[in-house]
Image 1 (spheres, helix red, strand yellow):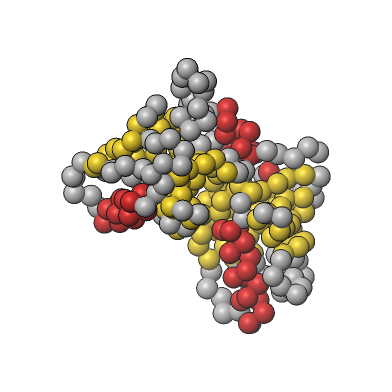
Image 2: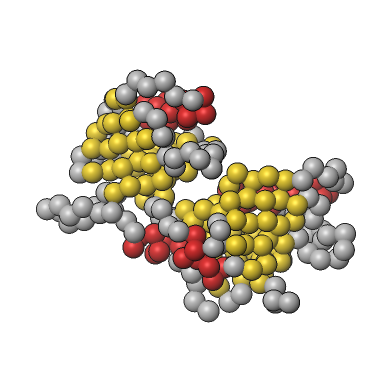
Length: 253
């Protein structure tokens, strides 16, 4: 089976405006996923935060105020961000504040692993991705058993003898699984080349130290990975040249 390239699906939906220099890969609307390295927690009834680039302008919205600024040439500092002055609910106001603080030092941008990254020096301060329906990745539906995980000496299975697992329902954009002790639940977001597991919840079983560490490492790997690859019945999360997690597809019962 050929690898699924998540970013290639996103590029189909990219809203690019043609200019004299040809289409710009930055043009169009992006969904903001992380600010200062922290995933944005968006409620089910809340608008998705967006960043839209059009020619030399940019507009950002977290569902309340409109934040506008200049889209500079690559390598140049971003200018002041101008905002409307509406009073916003606390979660939205906090996201706007974090974004404005991040953009105050922003001085470059790039597309890396299919995601728009805005940088302050060498630090990624804003990360955004194209909107891709999770249903387009329905081929990943099913249950996957954990085979490999970096950072632990050996993988500890469940009490019933099964390995830790991940179950994906891309039609609904949901995931659940077990780390070896606790059950977890999350939304699944195709973010460029990676599948992000976000807004995760977890049962609160008290775990032995080795299982508690395994659980912590597993969930951190999902957050740290820069790309996800599916090939030959394996589903892998990578960061650079390091394989963080590898799952194999379970046969359907």
